[in-house]
Length: 255
Image (cartoon, rainbow, N blue to C red; front, side, top):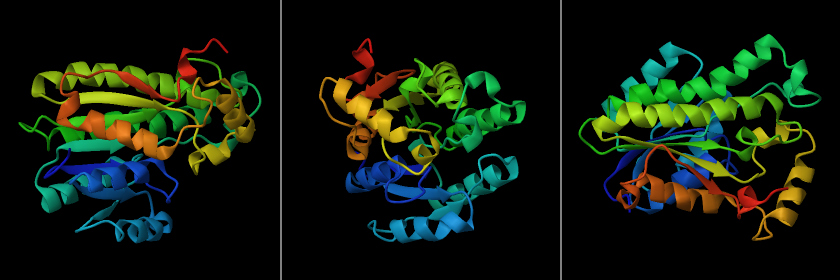
C-alpha cells in the first residue's frame, strides 16, 4: 500500500515499541522509512533494528524538546529523502513521580514537561513535516490512549496531555487540510512498551482491559501497525481529524 512512499517515524525505542511495529509494517508495504532516536544511549538499539529492514534506513538523532535538534533532523531528512509522504509520531513521556497518587498533586514542572514531550512535539514535527509534503497528499498520525477520554488509575498528567494531543489532531487537520495533508490519531489499547513501564499497576490495567474488551484480548502492536498503514495509505484519503480506536472494542464499554 505504501510502495514508493517515504516516511519519518518518531518514537522507536526498542523492539516492543509501537513505532517499531509501524516501521516494520510500512517497510513491508513498500515504503522507505527513516527512524529517529532521542540520544546516543537509544541510538545503538535503533540502529540495530533499522539494520533488519530492507534497503537503506536512515537513523537520525532528534530530541523533540529542542527546536535546534528538530531543525537539524528535518534538514537531514530533506537531504536524504528530498520530500516526505508520511510522518508517524509515537512520542510520550511523563516523570514517574507524576504517574502515581492523585492528579491534584501534579507539579507545575511535571505538567509542563509532559505537555512539551507528549503534546507540543507533535505540533512541532507536523509543522516541519508539512513543509516536505507539499503537493504529495501527505499523511500524519500520532498515538493516543483512552486515558484522554476517561480517568485511568495512575495515568494522571498523561491523560491530560493525551487530551490536548487529540485536540491538536483536529486543529492540525483543519490547518493542513487545504494543503492536501491528512492528520489522524490512533487510540491504542494498553501495550507493554518502555513508556508503559512507568505507569503504576500497569499489569492490572492490562488484565482489566482483557476482561472487559468485547474481543476479550489485549491489543497487539501489530494490530495498531495495520491500522496505521490504512491511515497512511490512499485507502483513507477521505479521513482526517479522527481518533481511531484500536483496542478490541474496550472504548465502547461503560466500565
